Amino acid sequence: MVFLRFSGCNLKCPFCDTDHSGYREMGAEEIVAEMLQAGGECRRACVTGGEPSLQLDEALVEALHRAGFRIHVETNGTRVLPGGVDWLTLSPKSDVKGLKGDGTVVLERADEVKVVYEGFPVDKWAAFPADWHFLQPCDTGDEAKNKALWAETMDHIQRHPLWRLSLQTHKLLKIR
Image 1 (cartoon, rainbow, N blue to C red):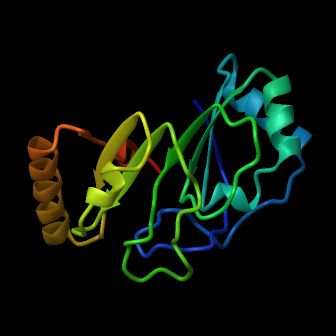
Image 2: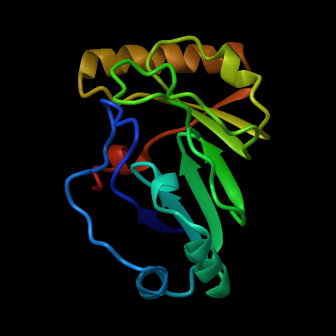
Image 3: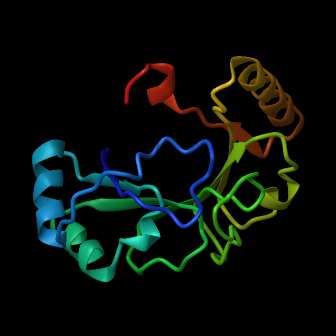
């Protein structure tokens, strides 16, 4: 998987690991050229952020498809996405404390729902139309709180088999 991480977000969650201060403006063809170089033979692209719906457009989707990429997008779901996305991950943030914007989800379906769990109820997201439902314990930066969230996440998953565990492997491996 080649990751295309956009800067900028309409919500700016307090736990976000994206550096929103730095970016480089690029056109669709320039982005694709760098992804081809970085990914070698890989033709799977994960478009993430920040919030990718702020920058992802039809021209970039078409350019990625022309280059043979299968496009996976991870979004907070607050904005409509261009057509042609091959896999959609909804990571809703409407229940997150301390948002800098309106977290209301406008999407009607996703391939998967991934809830970053901070201790709030997740039942409404179990009903969201998706093939897969994941809970990811939030990394709050506080070791004691993280440990409690891990325990709550695992307990919820064990009691509700619809949910599966999602981990931020890069953080566990200390990769930035």
